[in-house]
Amino acid sequence: MSLVVCTYLWSAAPSGEHAYTPDDVHLLQRMVVRHLTIPHEFAVITDRPELFAEDTAIRAIPLIRRTQAPTGHCLERLMTFHPEGRTLIGERIFQMDLDTIPVGNMDAIVNRPEDVVLWRNPARVPWDKPSRPSRPLYNGSFVLHRGGTMPWVWESFDPAHPAARDDQTWYSFLFGPEAPYWDENHGVYRPAREDTPGSGVDGDLPENARLVTFPGSEGKPNDPRVRARCPWIAVHRC
Image 1 (cartoon, rainbow, N blue to C red):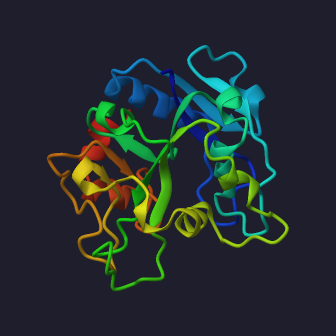
Image 2 (cartoon, rainbow, N blue to C red):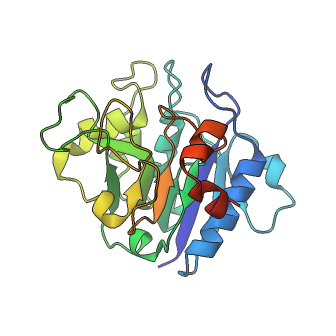
Protein backbone atom coordinates (compact mmCIF):
# COMPACT_ATOMS: atom_id res chain seq x y z
CA MET A 1 0.00 0.00 0.00
CA SER A 2 1.51 3.31 -1.08
CA LEU A 3 2.21 5.90 1.60
CA VAL A 4 2.00 9.67 1.23
CA VAL A 5 3.51 11.80 3.99
CA CYS A 6 1.86 15.20 3.76
CA THR A 7 1.86 18.53 5.48
CA TYR A 8 -0.19 21.71 5.06
CA LEU A 9 0.91 25.22 4.09
CA TRP A 10 -1.65 27.97 3.67
CA SER A 11 -1.09 31.69 3.33
CA ALA A 12 -3.93 33.07 5.44
CA ALA A 13 -2.66 32.14 8.90
CA PRO A 14 -4.77 33.46 11.79
CA SER A 15 -3.57 36.70 13.31
CA GLY A 16 -0.67 36.18 15.68
CA GLU A 17 0.29 32.72 14.45
CA HIS A 18 3.77 31.83 13.29
CA ALA A 19 4.03 32.37 9.52
CA TYR A 20 5.35 29.30 7.68
CA THR A 21 7.16 29.32 4.34
CA PRO A 22 8.20 26.82 1.65
CA ASP A 23 11.54 26.55 3.46
CA ASP A 24 9.70 24.92 6.36
CA VAL A 25 8.22 22.37 3.95
CA HIS A 26 11.62 21.55 2.46
CA LEU A 27 13.12 21.21 5.94
CA LEU A 28 10.42 18.77 7.06
CA GLN A 29 10.82 16.72 3.89
CA ARG A 30 14.56 16.33 4.50
CA MET A 31 14.01 15.25 8.10
CA VAL A 32 11.36 12.72 7.10
CA VAL A 33 13.67 11.16 4.52
CA ARG A 34 16.31 10.61 7.22
CA HIS A 35 13.91 8.92 9.62
CA LEU A 36 11.51 6.93 7.43
CA THR A 37 12.70 3.80 5.64
CA ILE A 38 9.27 2.80 4.30
CA PRO A 39 8.88 3.86 0.63
CA HIS A 40 6.82 7.00 0.51
CA GLU A 41 6.01 10.18 -1.38
CA PHE A 42 6.17 13.58 0.31
CA ALA A 43 3.43 16.10 -0.46
CA VAL A 44 2.31 19.54 0.64
CA ILE A 45 -1.35 20.56 0.57
CA THR A 46 -1.30 24.27 -0.13
CA ASP A 47 -3.10 27.27 -1.58
CA ARG A 48 0.19 28.18 -3.33
CA PRO A 49 1.09 25.05 -5.33
CA GLU A 50 3.06 27.15 -7.82
CA LEU A 51 5.74 27.62 -5.14
CA PHE A 52 6.68 23.95 -5.57
CA ALA A 53 6.33 23.65 -9.33
CA GLU A 54 10.03 22.92 -9.87
CA ASP A 55 10.49 20.66 -6.86
CA THR A 56 10.81 17.00 -7.80
CA ALA A 57 10.96 15.83 -4.15
CA ILE A 58 7.66 17.40 -3.09
CA ARG A 59 4.26 16.98 -4.75
CA ALA A 60 2.06 20.06 -4.37
CA ILE A 61 -1.66 19.34 -3.88
CA PRO A 62 -4.06 22.28 -4.29
CA LEU A 63 -5.88 23.02 -1.05
CA ILE A 64 -9.66 22.68 -1.15
CA ARG A 65 -10.94 25.22 1.37
CA ARG A 66 -14.55 24.13 1.77
CA THR A 67 -13.89 23.62 5.47
CA GLN A 68 -12.43 27.05 6.15
CA ALA A 69 -14.47 28.58 8.97
CA PRO A 70 -14.47 32.02 10.62
CA THR A 71 -12.34 30.70 13.50
CA GLY A 72 -9.48 30.01 11.08
CA HIS A 73 -7.80 27.45 13.32
CA CYS A 74 -6.41 24.54 11.32
CA LEU A 75 -9.75 23.45 9.88
CA GLU A 76 -8.15 23.41 6.43
CA ARG A 77 -6.51 20.15 7.54
CA LEU A 78 -9.87 18.38 7.36
CA MET A 79 -9.09 17.95 3.65
CA THR A 80 -7.21 14.84 4.77
CA PHE A 81 -10.69 13.27 5.04
CA HIS A 82 -11.98 14.50 1.68
CA PRO A 83 -14.28 11.91 0.02
CA GLU A 84 -11.84 11.84 -2.92
CA GLY A 85 -8.83 11.78 -0.63
CA ARG A 86 -7.44 8.57 -2.11
CA THR A 87 -7.28 10.23 -5.54
CA LEU A 88 -6.35 13.72 -4.38
CA ILE A 89 -3.75 12.76 -1.78
CA GLY A 90 -3.04 9.06 -1.60
CA GLU A 91 -4.05 5.56 -0.59
CA ARG A 92 -2.41 5.79 2.81
CA ILE A 93 -1.91 9.26 4.28
CA PHE A 94 0.28 10.34 7.17
CA GLN A 95 -0.43 14.00 7.93
CA MET A 96 2.04 15.89 10.10
CA ASP A 97 2.52 19.47 11.23
CA LEU A 98 5.21 21.68 9.74
CA ASP A 99 6.73 22.39 13.14
CA THR A 100 7.44 18.70 13.79
CA ILE A 101 10.95 17.39 14.36
CA PRO A 102 11.48 13.69 13.60
CA VAL A 103 14.06 12.46 16.10
CA GLY A 104 13.84 8.68 15.64
CA ASN A 105 12.72 6.05 13.17
CA MET A 106 9.14 6.73 12.04
CA ASP A 107 8.35 3.32 10.53
CA ALA A 108 6.29 2.06 13.48
CA ILE A 109 4.29 5.31 13.52
CA VAL A 110 3.07 5.04 9.93
CA ASN A 111 2.94 1.25 9.65
CA ARG A 112 -0.48 0.84 11.26
CA PRO A 113 -3.41 -1.07 9.65
CA GLU A 114 -6.34 1.01 10.95
CA ASP A 115 -8.39 3.35 8.75
CA VAL A 116 -7.50 6.19 11.11
CA VAL A 117 -5.01 6.72 13.94
CA LEU A 118 -5.10 9.90 16.03
CA TRP A 119 -2.71 11.40 18.58
CA ARG A 120 -4.12 11.42 22.08
CA ASN A 121 -3.83 14.97 23.36
CA PRO A 122 -0.83 14.94 25.74
CA ALA A 123 -2.09 18.13 27.40
CA ARG A 124 -4.77 15.99 29.09
CA VAL A 125 -3.04 14.55 32.18
CA PRO A 126 -3.96 11.84 32.91
CA TRP A 127 -5.60 11.40 29.52
CA ASP A 128 -8.76 9.58 30.66
CA LYS A 129 -9.28 11.60 33.87
CA PRO A 130 -7.60 14.94 33.21
CA SER A 131 -7.50 17.88 35.58
CA ARG A 132 -8.63 19.99 32.58
CA PRO A 133 -11.36 17.88 30.91
CA SER A 134 -12.31 20.69 28.50
CA ARG A 135 -9.13 20.05 26.48
CA PRO A 136 -9.79 18.01 23.31
CA LEU A 137 -9.31 14.26 23.32
CA TYR A 138 -6.92 14.45 20.36
CA ASN A 139 -4.31 16.79 18.94
CA GLY A 140 -4.56 17.33 15.17
CA SER A 141 -0.80 17.58 14.58
CA PHE A 142 -0.64 13.95 13.43
CA VAL A 143 -3.21 11.85 11.58
CA LEU A 144 -2.82 8.52 9.80
CA HIS A 145 -5.70 7.79 7.42
CA ARG A 146 -6.71 5.39 4.68
CA GLY A 147 -7.69 7.88 1.99
CA GLY A 148 -11.38 8.19 1.18
CA THR A 149 -12.65 5.78 3.84
CA MET A 150 -14.24 8.30 6.25
CA PRO A 151 -15.85 10.98 4.08
CA TRP A 152 -18.29 11.90 6.84
CA VAL A 153 -15.48 13.69 8.72
CA TRP A 154 -15.34 16.16 5.82
CA GLU A 155 -18.97 16.08 4.69
CA SER A 156 -20.60 16.63 8.08
CA PHE A 157 -18.65 19.80 8.83
CA ASP A 158 -20.59 22.95 7.94
CA PRO A 159 -18.20 25.91 7.54
CA ALA A 160 -21.12 28.34 7.73
CA HIS A 161 -22.11 27.00 11.14
CA PRO A 162 -18.98 25.39 12.57
CA ALA A 163 -19.60 23.07 15.48
CA ALA A 164 -15.93 23.06 16.46
CA ARG A 165 -13.27 25.76 16.79
CA ASP A 166 -10.52 23.59 15.27
CA ASP A 167 -9.83 20.19 13.76
CA GLN A 168 -8.86 18.51 17.01
CA THR A 169 -12.12 19.53 18.67
CA TRP A 170 -13.99 18.17 15.66
CA TYR A 171 -12.10 14.86 15.80
CA SER A 172 -12.82 14.58 19.50
CA PHE A 173 -16.54 15.13 18.90
CA LEU A 174 -16.78 12.66 16.02
CA PHE A 175 -14.52 9.84 17.18
CA GLY A 176 -14.95 9.93 20.95
CA PRO A 177 -12.46 8.25 23.28
CA GLU A 178 -12.19 4.93 21.44
CA ALA A 179 -10.23 5.89 18.30
CA PRO A 180 -6.95 4.09 17.54
CA TYR A 181 -4.19 6.30 18.83
CA TRP A 182 -0.58 7.18 19.47
CA ASP A 183 0.70 8.55 22.76
CA GLU A 184 4.03 8.87 24.53
CA ASN A 185 4.34 5.08 24.62
CA HIS A 186 4.63 5.21 20.82
CA GLY A 187 7.30 7.92 20.96
CA VAL A 188 5.08 10.87 19.97
CA TYR A 189 5.61 14.00 22.04
CA ARG A 190 5.20 17.74 22.39
CA PRO A 191 7.14 20.09 24.71
CA ALA A 192 5.58 19.93 28.17
CA ARG A 193 3.10 22.67 28.93
CA GLU A 194 4.25 24.87 31.76
CA ASP A 195 0.82 24.59 33.38
CA THR A 196 0.64 20.80 32.96
CA PRO A 197 3.58 18.78 34.32
CA GLY A 198 3.97 15.45 32.58
CA SER A 199 2.44 16.65 29.32
CA GLY A 200 5.55 16.18 27.18
CA VAL A 201 9.27 16.67 26.71
CA ASP A 202 10.93 18.74 29.42
CA GLY A 203 14.48 19.44 28.28
CA ASP A 204 16.11 16.15 27.31
CA LEU A 205 14.55 13.79 24.80
CA PRO A 206 12.91 10.61 26.14
CA GLU A 207 14.78 7.51 24.99
CA ASN A 208 11.82 6.27 22.92
CA ALA A 209 11.14 9.61 21.16
CA ARG A 210 10.32 9.42 17.44
CA LEU A 211 8.41 12.65 16.76
CA VAL A 212 8.23 15.93 18.65
CA THR A 213 5.93 18.69 17.51
CA PHE A 214 5.49 22.23 18.78
CA PRO A 215 1.81 23.25 19.00
CA GLY A 216 2.74 26.76 20.07
CA SER A 217 1.83 27.26 23.70
CA GLU A 218 5.43 26.61 24.78
CA GLY A 219 7.13 28.26 21.80
CA LYS A 220 8.38 27.17 18.40
CA PRO A 221 11.64 25.33 17.65
CA ASN A 222 13.31 28.43 16.19
CA ASP A 223 12.76 30.37 19.45
CA PRO A 224 16.19 30.89 21.10
CA ARG A 225 14.71 30.22 24.54
CA VAL A 226 13.24 26.92 23.37
CA ARG A 227 16.50 25.91 21.66
CA ALA A 228 18.50 26.69 24.80
CA ARG A 229 16.25 24.42 26.85
CA CYS A 230 16.25 21.67 24.20
CA PRO A 231 19.75 21.40 22.67
CA TRP A 232 18.68 18.32 20.72
CA ILE A 233 16.77 20.63 18.36
CA ALA A 234 20.04 21.79 16.75
CA VAL A 235 21.04 18.17 16.15
CA HIS A 236 17.83 16.98 14.52
CA ARG A 237 16.28 20.07 12.88
CA CYS A 238 18.38 20.37 9.75
